[in-house]
Image (cartoon, rainbow, N blue to C red; front, top):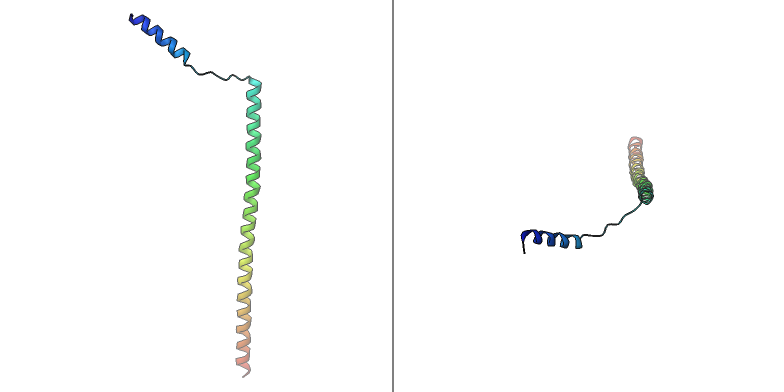
Length: 90
């Protein structure tokens, strides 16, 4: 076998192992891209509102903790003031 015949045989083998290509029309590609964009947009909006809800819950917890702390400080201050008034009256 000559060198030329070996090269031709290799080309035939390469052609037989080529993968099949999926061909889609421009309309199908446009539809696919638009569907993906809509899916990404919906995911973004859902994540936005989920994050907003999570932040509101965290902020509410902070306000509740501060309110409890304020009530404790107010109670202690009131008690301290009453103790001072009792000492002054004696």
